Length: 164
Image 1 (cartoon, helix red, strand yellow):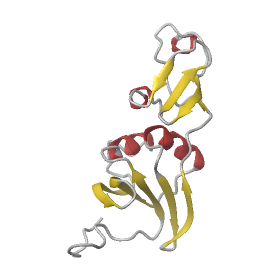
Image 2: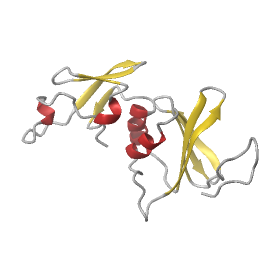
Image 3: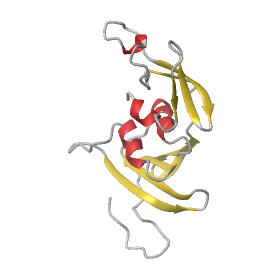
């Protein structure tokens, strides 16, 4: 995306006509968001993506922003996104205007989204066709517990166990 010529306050990146803007991402988490959305590493034939790190925010102080041109993320993708950026907001852009807007919500049950941290859990055995299922224990801070073995993953560890 082209950088705007605006000085001081104003747009850092031009508006998109069709796509998704993920806003209110905690500072430093934009790359994790791109990984969850399978946009990182960038592909030569992939979507056009703009990333703003450490933008000023009245609510958060600092925030990251991700703009994806030509792709509307689904609610399922947004649920996975909530695992690494639970404070983020999704804006679906159609015809240059915000057509839908919602705050992401961590799923009550994350099935197939997180790998259990316990190496002896049944979900980690190659010969067992069991999808990992993690149940939400706490929203603040974010914490999940494996329904099979009871192991937990805290907010600081989640990024390392994401399967998507």
